[in-house]
Amino acid sequence: MALLLRLVLVLTVAYLGLCLVVYLTQAKLVYFPGPPPHATPAAFGLEFRELELRAADGVRLHGWFLPAQDASASPKTVLVSHGNAGSIEGRTELAQAFLELGWSVLLYDYRGYGKSAGTPDEEGTYRDAEAAYAELTEVEQLPPERIVLYGESLGAAVTLELARRHPCAAVITESAFTSLPDVGAVAYPFLPVRLLSRFRYDNLAKVAELGVPLLLIHSPADELVPFAHAERLFAAAREPKQLVRTAGGHNDGGFCLNAEARAEVARFLSELPATR
Image 1 (cartoon, one colour):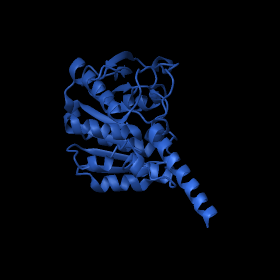
Image 2 (image 1 turned 90 degrees about the horizontal axis):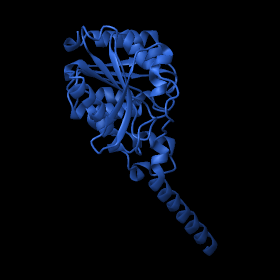
Image 3 (image 1 turned 120 degrees about the horizontal axis):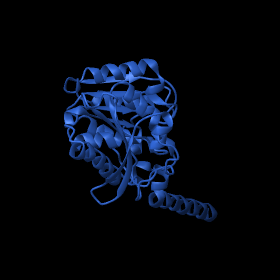
């Protein structure tokens, strides 16, 4: 019996130690920043302008502004908050999809990603999105009703928070999760993730606050964020709202590689009254 008690004690201490390590180092389990871009949109024949942004806490951020061909006639922009891994270098194809629909695009990297300074955390990513938004509204003098906010995966959470804080024409999310602890609880079922998580990104609590059109894009084949997350978010959101099914896994390219989903995005954007 004494040996059994010692074994239980050792296992308990080891488990609590693991929980402590996860709690203290979880940023490395959440954020996967990529290196500075090696190629620019120019490599794809796209016009662009380098941006240096400043977050409210002074962190320097890097971005690209890609103007649509007819931007002077009817200026309107999609502000892209990208997914977790990599940097804006891997989002050129996404930007090109919006450019082909007649929309300018602003791409930016979160703190610690690409050429942006700093270290990522939840509130920091929200500040970074606000810096990009300020570039459009204060520098470009673009009215909020001509700005659509797009976010993919982690970026969907950043986008929803930005839409809570600032007006916009509409919100598009792709591969959005209900909350980060919900994702972590599935990935690490042996840990009390909901107790340990210092990063919440609670989309389910925020989506009902939106007062603008919402387009949710999600693949039933998503292996990281199950389609059930999209269904719960859609059920919680206000009208007008739309849920579009796309194809492929979480990192297989998203809507811009799916003709039907692309058509739905084009229709959604074309029906926004303030951006025609």
